[in-house]
Length: 491
Ligand code: ZN
Ligand code: MN
Image: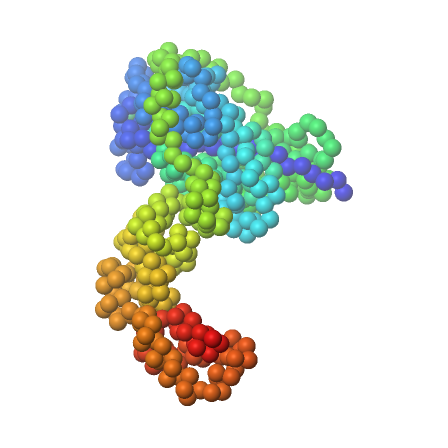
């Protein structure tokens, strides 16, 4: 049986989170009563004149800076003519030959893969090249009812980036990693929330399959209207299998692969034909006479200082400067706010090892937040408090278990770690003289255990620590006790 090569390219539409729309001053927003955020421009009424939203251009250029794109000196707007049921003027204002961004790439982050696929990543560190990113306007939203269709133009005119990748993705897992990584970067740049469930990010997936050894790509089939990450993964898998079945001649109904657009039915778990695609539509693009081209150099210069440190750059710095494992660095960098929280905790506690602070945040804080269905931005526990708490544990002032109790108290009711330690009477006895007296007392009545320690039984040491804890009412510093017993018994 021949092996098959799967080739996937993605066209992602991502809304920008500007205050106003692309060509008018109507508010951009999710929800809202239908057709309340509209005006003659975004309704596409004849004679209405568009005005460019500079903020949308800036955010697109910032996206280009983050993804390593280049920007033509002059960028311009074009009309894409078509019958658009949800766009009364019947053209979309978009960009054809001089888009804001060309080239660049999206790095696929390990953590962006589906959880169950993170241990078997075929191409770690892969970067998917981009063809281009252009800026255009979103269209209205049609809702189909039994006998009629309603139209809501609140969405019409929302600034939309179309991010086009080269056909370089090899699997459904890479598609998910691409979308998650891209989303993370857009959020880092503050250009959009890219929430697929809210339609803020939408992906068209082009899939083709060819037998190994064949040079030219197989028949290109496009999947449209998939609105969740998990559905995209299922859709790509199912469509890939369908295409291989057709090529192998064992598909029950489809005999040949036809260049077409297909719809994913998540309930049926299969793709169905929407329309077969004649060769590229003749959209009769022409430069928009209402909008002047934009000189990009000054905008690029303005946006350069706003380019944030990206997730993979942050990870590398956390590993290098703080000695974190790649795993921990990835968890912390997965969210900008979480990474900032970690850095604030570290700078508040210069004497506590950053690695330990990372552990407390990842193991304790994220666990609690998760239980409480909260995110790091809801967190009322000050980062400096975690730093102080870790410093207390590391200095041996309180034990690890006591630290966890203090943490619980901090998380629930706030306060200062040192105050809680005092209130709970947790301060450990680290006064060597007092501890030595306790140890002497134990040794005097435990000849057998002393012999065991002398005979090299490490576990017997724990027995001494346990006794010291009992005698001190749980306040003895266990590390110190062990040291003292060693010294006294073994010399
Ligand atoms: Zn408007
Ligand atoms: Mn488009």
